[in-house]
Length: 115
Length: 113
Image (cartoon, rainbow over all chains, first blue to last red; front, top):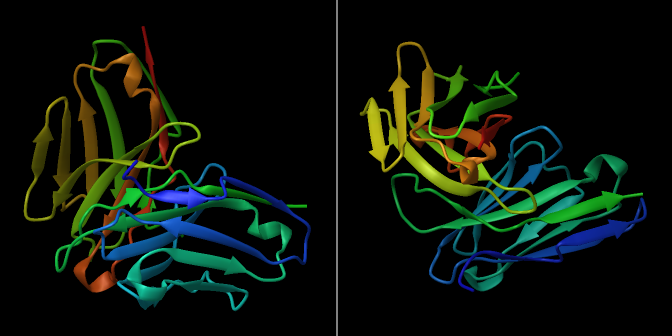
């Protein structure tokens, strides 16, 4: 399978706990995005990497959220001290290109439920 | 405030007929638009895109039309097939808006056999 892979697919956690999600992009893709989607809404941009550099962060991304992409390959998204409002589908996407904005390929997402 | 709007939450169409999904945007700086399709329990899948230098882009049964003056785009699916039943998201971006996409809330298309 050469698509974008996300793990875990589902995560249930108690409020206040920390969680970490992993994304493995398509291997040659240099761009990696994290989005969050809640019920009835479209994906909302969280952050973007070009290779290992985190170039953009949404103001939606509070200090409790941190993302990394060491060596420009896989990426992790950590949420500290989770809150019930963090419950959502977290989507990772990757793309290849420079200049013109290319279409991104999405993974299946990690569904987070904070209880 | 939503910068990308899809005012029809759902649409039902008979198999073989045309499906027209609409999208409106408010940010005049957007110059690149995409449509994604999403099945349940899957991530969005890229469908078709259009740059603001064009007013139409066609790929098989899928055609996207862009009306910049009206800040409106539409996706036409002809003929519609039951396998097209999914949620369709319109997304927009701009060269000077960064590398992220702004998505609309989606329209659920049901193609009835």
